[in-house]
Length: 301
Image 1 (cartoon, helix red, strand yellow):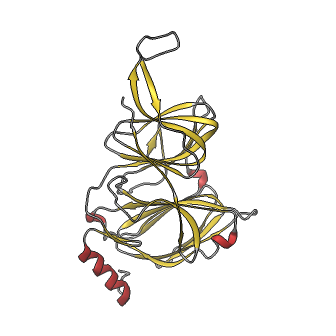
Image 2 (cartoon, one colour):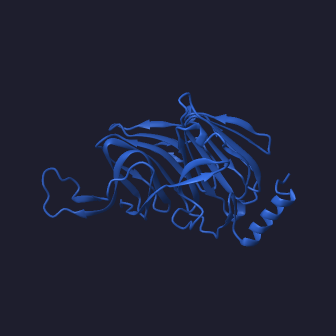
Image 3 (tube, helix red, strand yellow):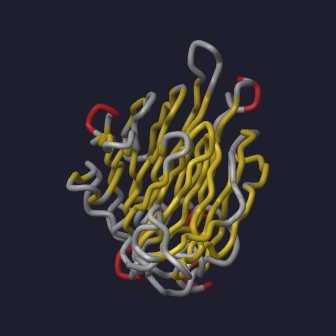
């Protein structure tokens, strides 16, 4: 077993999207090598309805998959396929945009006016860029939840973890998407296969992630396993932690515990050409998509 060292810690950046929604962007619209197969992660969290009610009116997607995960409030969505529904607290939607879809998402707060959710974009390989669009809407009650003996709690949104499998299936990036809470003062090691890229996004509490281990000089009775774990500085709310290679992530929770998304996937390792929510492999493909959008031929039968 080898610790995945922390490569970089980044604070998410305030930005405005849609018709004026204020959110925080952990990564996106830049170089993709560190996060491949993932392209973007937005944290849309607000207690002021004026900062999110304008929502994300009709907009196109092509060449990607999006996952929307709601923690507070609701999001009403509809699209050019005739699909329509509402995501509530704990619900997840995975949308495969494929060859093209028009889509809108309109957030509503809870009774206290709170809205909180995440949207993650996963790339599609060239062989699936023009696949048929589809949805997977999953109610929160269908997402497996596991509590370990030390109180660590994990929701398995997608992928296999601790003997449970999330309900989202057939996603090209083969992602593992976990919502993890580690209680105050506890240390937890979570397996992430070495062939996967991985990142953590902290959204509650504080904690430190391990970056290395070294052998103890002289063992004492309290030192088990013959090595010392070295940790980075504590990180808190809205922090993105990017990991290097290895097969496990170790976190030490702070005095209020720590909650974070732990996301991993197998890199696609293909060129990326994108224009907003349209992501292709070449500039020629991108220009073709934009031309179709302007001419009204973007949506295929």
